[in-house]
Image (tube, rainbow over all chains, first blue to last red; front, side, top):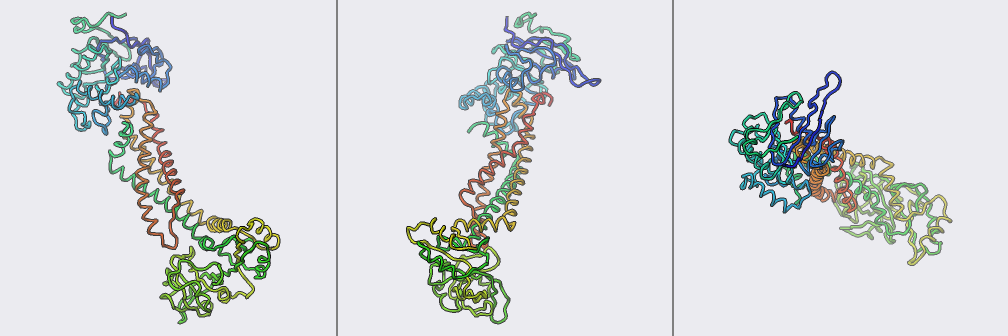
Length: 242
Length: 378
């Protein structure tokens, strides 16, 4: 059975007060295990982003507990949350958010530099990661010289260069065409399988469903479903959880 | 080069137009501060130029004298009392004051500052003499003027004649670079002639330069002079210099105006830099938020912003330094040269670096409030 890397229990998050109060996430409990690509789906305003922010230790829940690789995020201060993210979580964003003034290799290297890693080793590792995501010759290119798909690959390389146990991806294929979207999902799926990472993908895009081992549906801040996919049943990668 | 420094450098150069505008602002600010500081030192040095060139151990001046240009007088018999004190080698009288210079053919009057000293003594003689000699002033009716004042005095050089207080004078020596910080040219003459030009009685002097015998006890001589003379002060050149500077810089408001200029330069520079750093940070806010999202500490981001501020300071200082050096060179022979001492230069560097660091506060205040969640909503 794969190890549980992230565990959220009874997470609730409310915004606003009084009659304008909105409960964005309401009593959500879920866990993410290594080796599994989980898809979080739901309509706009369903609480996907809020839940992803909480699971990614960017937002603290109003109620409930969150444990990331054994570290409690409860009542943690911003710098402690940053430390948990730095140590255990890799992020991939819909808009890539690469520094336009840095090359592809430098953008990847930056993720190691903020961790205080030796710059020569960081440069070597960044180059290897770019090779791994199919950007061998793009290391010296600036984001403006790259396509959306290439930029998203750089963002993936940046997310995984520090070997995080958990990878959270927010609409990673939303800005990409079908071919690039498929290529990105192939990489994420491979990360889950070969690196034994827990990968959570938030998406509206039904094209990503075939890559998922598990799909979680959220609506009005409440989990409406958490099911293994046919792919899981076929490959047997997903283990039954409580 | 550390990646954080590369990032800071590239962020600065990314928008070249903004970077150039920032540099212009910084350079303007630094040059303004440099010029004001230089004027301060230049003015400070100009007001003491006579004191600096008088070879003496003590100045005896009337009580309450503010500066070299203070024209109060005392009796010459004080000189005999000073010479009677054990250890005193020489006591050289000076006569100074304001008079009018005009050409014999009814030309325009020009106020001048007369400096009278006996040419045979080691008093306050003209220096940097380029034509004639200081000793030539012993010839009655001769004066020494600086060649930079030919135009103002309406003369053409050596041998030119004019009148001071209705007495005919002839230029017998010409100096180079003895400029007054006021609009009045210095005119050097013999001691007695100076009294004539200033309508002073023959027993009056303005100051007394006292030299102590070699190996003499300066403090004891000073004490003895003080105990024997009333209504005069005994000042070392350093004390007289300090008093003159304080008077001209702080009692006249000139120093306050120069300080205001420095302050203005610092405020303008800080505001320009703060605005630029803030705009630059704001432009890259999504990327900084993404950095925060991937676990970057605030400290790292602050380092990038501080590097940006420092780079602005270094590049701005280099450019401003070159312009400042040109300004210093071009004003070297003017009435009010801009002078920057090594200490001032070091102070300027510290001031500009501090200014850049302070200007980064606004950007830092913005960046530490970044909510990493914003990257998920864009």
